[in-house]
Length: 116
Image (cartoon, rainbow, N blue to C red; front, side, top):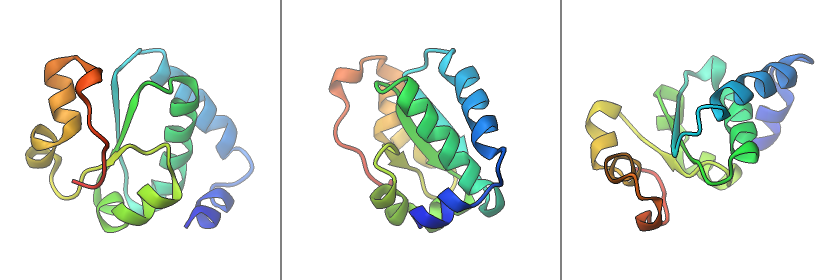
């Protein structure tokens, strides 16, 4: 999976990912969520990786149809992804560790994350 993501996206994808990540990282968010479909998943992964490199303390959350299908392989292949939400985030996010973090604004209580 990692090889497929790293080879997809064309020559300019890295530049775009870095630029997008800079905009996201400038928000100083504790939790950063990305939703993605299959065709945009490689770029989403690159942006998430760049955000985590810029803000290691930010919890990186992935959701959407593609993330739901490859949740555990994503968590294994990309250690910078902290949590994958499966299904409809309107239901799963409030129950997840990231949802608890968003409500509490206290990252010290965050437990190790996985697929939810």
